Image (tube, rainbow, N blue to C red; front, top):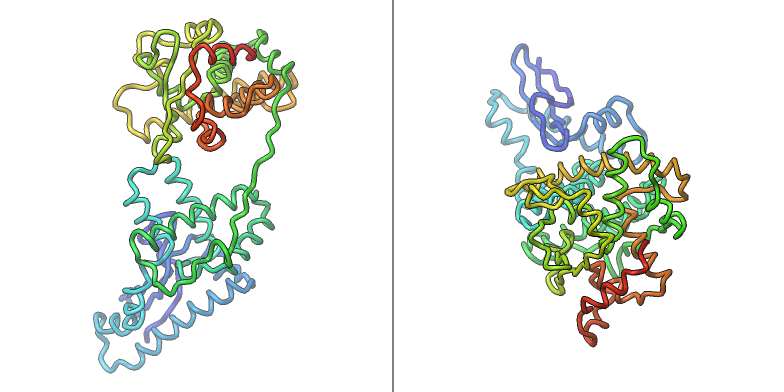
Amino acid sequence: MAKFHLELDKRVKLKNDRFNLSVRIGNGNDNMYLKYVPLTEKQYDDVFVKKAMDTKSVDFREQCLKFLGKCERLYSEMETFDKARYRELVYNKVVAVEKKTDSLQLTDLCTRFLKEKTQIKLKTRNLYQTAVNSFEEYKPGITILDITPEFLMNYERYKLDKDYSQASISAYFRHLCGIINYFIYKVKLIPKDYQYPFGKGGFIIKKYQTPKFVMSNEEIQSVVDFKDFETSEQEYARDIWLLLYRCNGMNYADLLRMKWSKRKKDFIIFTRMKTENTRKTNVKPITLAVNPKIQELLDKVGNRDSPFVLGLVEDGYSEKEFDYKKDWEMSKINNGLKYISEKLKLSVDLKLKTSRDCFATTHKRAGTPKEIIGEMMGHSNNYISTSNYLADLDPDKIREVNKCLF
């Protein structure tokens, strides 16, 4: 007598730490597995071991038990058991649906989206995957057809109750929106009668600006003057922070990949890594005036034996290698900056990313026009209209403007 069980088939591990939830048919020493849906061990434990009683878990459990019942019924109706024929009977209706909708599973669409959008950088790819994993965790096996304005509202409420920030939730929605738009307008895979869930009449993604708290001028000056280091790594960390601050609030990634060849006399001209593949228009290089303060720091932390200013990467690096190196170095530097923060009792934690905020705020306090600050930092949208009427900042103006920095 064959026995039927729903279980997580751990023989083959799938992407994102998932396994197939399957119906195992045991007949003596002969076992047959009929896969139903991928789940993580936690999802399986919540739904089938702990037997969570929320509506979604109960509904999902009922669907799975219905599939189990179908397998039992079809088995009992076969006079002579044939595995191949039995599998066809189990999946005959499901396969017909799969040809139309199985490719609409959000995890599958995300995989295809990232495979086809080769220009997306590794960090952004990871953000897309994180967003999709979050939706998959909320509703296992989710398809595009499940995504409605009501679903998005319930998901947002659920995440807020779990103490996720509104900024993170909105970012997940933007990545989801990007995937949906791609398969509606570019690939045209999503059915035409699908109700688009975003925008007017649907779900509105909230715009959320994270409050920025920036050190006072006196605190910035105290960082500049700090000398009570316990290790050379702490001094190096402060110098890198200060270099980024004085270099127009440059991102660490741009400094890490910067080459000495980018310097033209007393200027360094570079393009922000962040915007190289995200802007279709208005891609403008940033002109950085090398003043004596910057030159002193370049002499101190620079490596003249390498084509790269910091000498921490080599030509021919892959995107993955670069990201690993960047994250590793940033972690070490931020650890050194933490010591300085605690020693000075700063009101804002000293981290690499705060150098950019401090650059902008120092200029704002000094009365520098916003459009000029934006141009020096490489912003795309707060100075475009101004740039239509004004010539680019001339070198002498750049030198003059940055005199307010510490």
